[in-house]
Amino acid sequence: MLKTLTLETPAGDALVDITQQVKDAVAESGVESGLCAIIVPHTTAGITLNSALDQATASDIVAELRRLVPTRVDFAHQYDTPADAAAHIKASLIGNSITLAVAGGELCIGWSQFVMFYEFDGPRSREAQVKIIAG
Amino acid sequence: MLKTLTLETPAGDALVDITQQVKDAVAESGVESGLCAIIVPHTTAGITLNSALDQATASDIVAELRRLVPTRVDFAHQYDTPADAAAHIKASLIGNSITLAVAGGELCIGWSQFVMFYEFDGPRSREAQVKIIAG
Amino acid sequence: MLKTLTLETPAGDALVDITQQVKDAVAESGVESGLCAIIVPHTTAGITLNSALDQATASDIVAELRRLVPTRVDFAHQYDTPADAAAHIKASLIGNSITLAVAGGELCIGWSQFVMFYEFDGPRSREAQVKIIAG
Image (cartoon, rainbow over all chains, first blue to last red; front, side):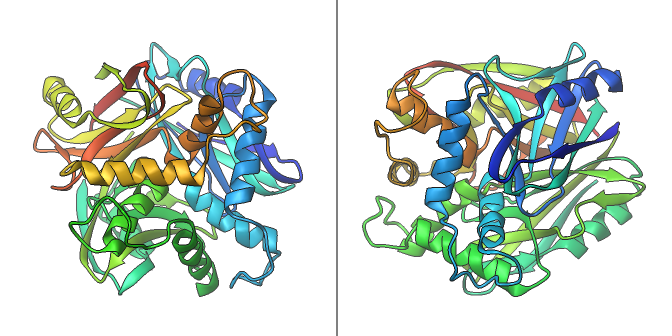
């Protein structure tokens, strides 16, 4: 099953928790055992697993990525804003796909892991693909 | 189907667009619905999705990775060149595999996304694996 | 087949070679052709492919990641140690899953590639999931 999730992201860089939507897609698929790939079809957003138990972890990740890849005016890419140019770089650092296991009809992630859609240049209307196959 | 693509990379760090070869592999597989993993079997190269609509995005990514992981002479790894030592680090930051969905017999990527082979220590003769399974 | 590997990691940041355990899981699965996803269900650890032919490459990667994301006391995340807060960020930079091909009953990785469990906040008792499907 290929399910396309839709979401609205806040301004700037932000981690948006989509764990429940991904778990719902796994349940909807009826797959008992298999793989679940989560894919971001945008060039200024990424996908990662991390803690959402408190907001501080997401704040640290966002702040550190902004420090590592500062938004500035001297990028070669001048078509969009400097934030957009920085966002393309962050997207390649974080990555656009993750692959997880499905067992017992459920998504196998750690107890402190959440599936986080990482927007680098919001606010935007975004999609995330959830592809589940049996095996 | 497992298809091995071959490519020649330019000197230094470079993003090489292999989107068409990956799409051709998906078409050749005859798979209507499934997963497509793209894997780099080298330790000084990676794989990423990003824009290839203009060359400026790739230039920014390459320049920023060079700034983040400067090629220098004080790496512990001294067997090869300093560029090779830096390349190993960049490979782990960018990653060696991505997993995409196949639907309607086509690779599901965003309209501004391209599959980019990321060479960190060219020029080299390289391979990329494209593995497609139905499901 | 879903196989859960267990491992003990050393103090601090470290790359632990789990290639043989992953290869053993592929052999145990009996899958001739398919996909093998390797997944880390922890938020302060990641997974990467890199060289383990000498220890210097791992030393460079660990040192560079510590330089890029310095352990310090001003993180927003104050629940655990500063090393734990830095570890969450490194986990998202390196990533939690990789997907490889299986062909001829064997894991398809490059001759200089090894599957490395990347601990950012050891020592810990850890797990890595190996999910293999035929196709």
